[in-house]
Length: 186
Image (tube, rainbow, N blue to C red; front, top):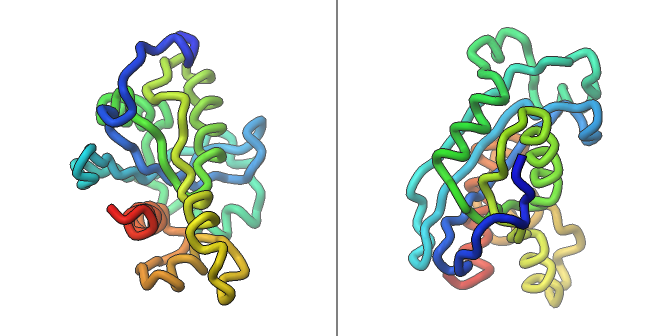
């Protein structure tokens, strides 16, 4: 697998941005798995959505899942009957968003799970090593606001009047994208 930093340099304003949200069977990359992926591909410089992606992922080791995570993510064997293999989803994303920047609410978690998944599947990285953390942007922009005491996606969405059906990855990523636009003035 190619080393992440071996990717050719591309000016950051020329890269597409992939807003991504993953739901997992827990938070430990050594034993938990990606269960859902939602993504929005955004072009620069207009920051318009050019493509979207959503998939339920077929878990291989559901027995190692954290029961609280499964409940929070509404995992049910029946509703996952159309789930696809992780490898297929990773290949879909790599074709959709080559050389992209990853963006998300707390995208470091997605980064960790994606890196581990690509390594397990022996697939190359399709994204750049810089991340756009929307939660950090919220920290900077909302710090002076006395009525904001918690910087989670749900509370910031309410503060900014952005619709959110929390812990539904497609809704989470669309809210994150809208928050990014509002807070960055784009």
